[in-house]
Image (cartoon, rainbow, N blue to C red; front, side):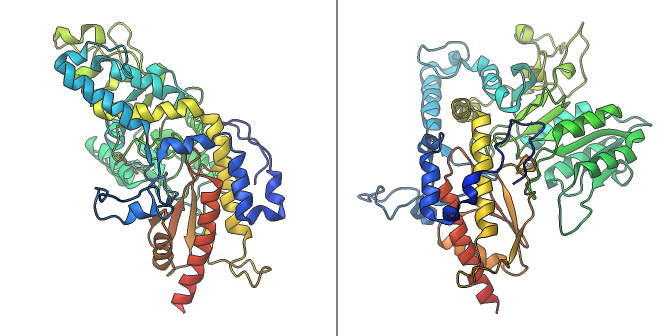
Length: 485
Ligand SMILES: Cc1ncc(COP(=O)(O)O)c(C=O)c1O
């Protein structure tokens, strides 16, 4: 465990003394940690797929089946970095939405109900922004719930990447998520520029350690300072789980006259973001990972207030649509585009209310739990996972040997990571390890040829989940080594 405080985060507890306890690798110990967890009640607000559910061939539950039986135990779901599980309150929110549509039809755009959870359809976007803003450290005017992550990246790049003869480069990670890479590359090409000249990739210096140090990122910015227009990085790197120092990197790029955008897909709902205070120019993210809003859920974007201003008809150029138009004159239909102030002015279409309803339902749980409390638990959960994986001997009959067929490529300093640990296996072991994990009802995700990503989500995962995972994973490693002989 690192001992310093995160400059851009809440104050972390220094090394947790109970990890020095010799009993820390016992299941009872993990259960005791769960008993003292102040957020433990939140797990009940989610539907965790059971081991039996994962094997079902039918969605329908056969008549007479007892779903409460102990054989139907929950899976060990550690995949919130990919797709979060379903919050129970989504059904409640959707029922209200379906009912309002059924009984009001088009008048549901304007007419509210005394027992509504969301306002009439005309105003759901504002309600969504209100619910979303605290999650990323923004004012409601600086965020919009809309579209999809890649679509929003394109919208934002179209507005923020305005290359000139002097400044035309975009700096991204060499191992950026493919969609981000494609979006940036295609934006460069749309300006008739050549990505081989205009795209700067930051590659890891050490192939054994695929992370990027802040110093390296700042150095690449310095080396390209004169002709770079934009830096686009991920808040948390999808592959390594590294949490970049958003505040320092943004300030440094700004000092060189460069705009900075962040893909916060793996950071939102995971770490405490302060996008406004860190002076970020723009950001985009999705809500299907740690924000538990379902596959392909409606996404979010942030535009710093200084970029969202509308003064005397003057505003930042963008791709426009009627839903971004000034609300008070939207229905005048005069075809003179004047955007709303803020991120809402980047909206294009009237929002899918069903999609927005799901995200807002999920955000209710974040409001109750609060991000600082979730992050505190997350640091402890992931630290416990790291402790168990690194300190438990692979061979119980040889407790002094600490040789392992894997390394953790995620930084070990909790200030430089979120919930996820990326585990790189010795080459050739992945398939067998995944097979054993699946047989035992463990859900994680893989990045071929050798990495699995494991992410305990503090809203619904427990210390016992983490303990069970380490037990099954070490067994899977032993089985994979035996099978490879
Ligand atoms: C970091 C990152 N960027 C972009 C994407 C693409 O997202 P979407 O398909 O929602 O546009 C993902 C998807 O997982 C991602 O993890």
